[in-house]
Image 1 (cartoon, helix red, strand yellow):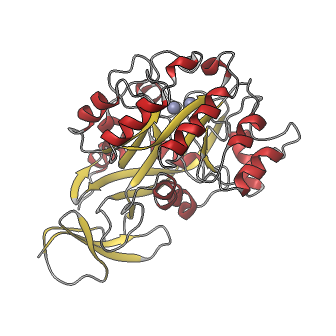
Image 2 (cartoon, helix red, strand yellow):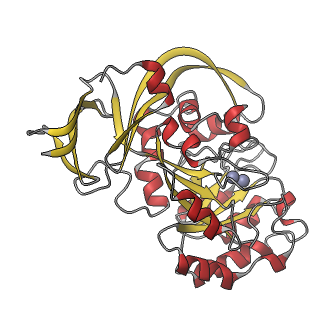
Length: 376
Ligand code: ZN
Ligand code: ZN
């Protein structure tokens, strides 16, 4: 007797499978025999993928600027795992960890290299805030929570320090066993070229399709050489949509040249969730249909690619023995407006609607699923 069987699930490649869950893990996939305490038949009407992972969010509820609740950005909209990108540094990360234990959504954190995290907009303007020993101690205390480092390297954050905070971040990364480093890019100085030159395999550039002058494309629309070289070294691109960091124009031109994001993430927090232009991860994912990506490509960005980028073992794929984190969703054909961070509005024809999340085997109907009346 399994705990849960979901039958007739449609995968993003249109195959139909059954999935059985036992003790919080995927126990069987394919044509599943036997019974379960909880059985749900999707009858091919709904899609299912590995649980969606949002690799750049802000959900430390006590943050003065970018606060939110993990479940409001997570399971309420089909996201089973969120990775907070540097809201907290060594000073508050233990408090953050404790608060997240009550959430149904699985929460991980990238620790800000500044002790304070993001309490003001310029946490790296004072080099004395960067405390490598404190970061290392936090990683040692919370090895299952802290999955990487975060450094925001744009003019308003670093002040007069240029790339010096990034040089320090790379040193801390080495001392911390080579955890992934996510680097926020935005206005210069420093120039993107200087940033990209310092990055190595596994590092992540977030806000990769921002529309600011210091973007990944040249004025002629070509990928900047330094970014191209960084990608060839294994540097990854993360979307990190946010309030100010996603341009349809940049995404369209980049994707047309085959420059796809590795991960699609929201950079969501309370304000851009409620007022837009982010709303939720599904909304951000749906925007990528309008710039030339397919359903399997979009789903890969929030499952297998996200798990690989953040090294979340046992997640991101439908495999026996992996965590039973699943997202059930539908694709709705309907014309609705999409707005990017530059204010460009386009008509989206295709929308992802998350209907339910399964976290460690437990079924949670989303807000959209409640409204949709699933009939399962
Ligand atoms: Zn940022
Ligand atoms: Zn952010």
